[in-house]
Image (cartoon, rainbow over the protein chains, first blue to last red):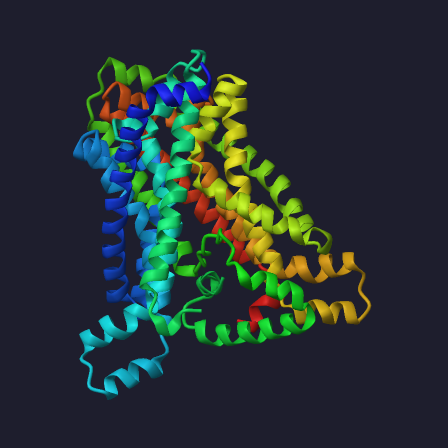
Length: 215
Length: 296
């Protein structure tokens, strides 16, 4: 059976898997972004706090994903729960680092001007600092998403959802005639998903970048 | 590119560095107008992961944490009751063998990654291959989207189960990020310094060996660290390709639902990963050329 025949015959299953894959990665990315930016906002003003936040999240990223998922299983059981927790944790580092760098990179004169026209602390943050820090944060999201896609594939071993199941099915019997098709479908599916997400982020970037700083 | 540049700077120096950067861009535009233009029209699709700058606090903190972690595991393990399945999975020196295999896989793959990626990176930044750099960076970007487990599975089907497939997968997976690091490191070199070196009559090889490479050492060392950390991680996947390693304990624990085996495997893997990262950051501090310290 050729690869195209396999795709044609199994497209229903593959689309479901791809949907689940995106469906687990995307919410985790959103949660990681929200938590990461919050951590960034809390820590960017003090040198040591920002340092501690980056240090902690980079230590998390050093941990191999299979080990992280393995450690989570005794606590929350197998399935979707360890996948979601692990993905959110791994997504944090690029977001935290880039929001700290982005918020610190905002020109103090601009913040001062905002204070001068009577903006409150919250207003300054929401209307001046965060919009200016948004491009690096979006870069962080773009770096994190393909990484999370790959980790989600590994999580399929612990009964997680998504295209990883296709890969592990092929890996379970490397000699069988469908093994190559299954692995190829799973792997290429993830690559395509990652590229689609990246294109979407570029679009989001175009739409959400403040007009004043568009290059 | 500017965000990636910013990420590489230590905190607090962003502004000064950003200024230096724009000045540098002007120089580049004057020197090689066509190249500067080419670099500006499309931002590179793949940006190397930002560097983690090692600090002395981290260098002392981590070993203490690791010792505490391993002691706690030891204590917990002594009182854990093991059934026969767990006993079988852990007895007869299997744990130390898995650990040793893991270390071996990591070291061997890192060696090959460096042997391939660093010379290739140097080659691709030479003037004759400027065009190829763009292609390489694009491929690196695509490679970044490829899941490690998928790559490994493909190689297992192609090469058959065994250490060879696992090692090949690990090397292929880590080559691209390290290559991107090396290229970024060599390209970040201040063009005025290169011109000065050429101006005093250094040969192209002399410029590379005595100016460009020493300046790129921090980035290359960071690439070594990236390779090591990536390889420790992908070495846990080697078990799916029949390559052994600590992943064996984790997968055994998951499939047989034996938590002691799973937790022991996971904690040993984590400890090893953190230790490797620590050693690499130590190397970064020790091996950084002295001349670069003064400016910072």
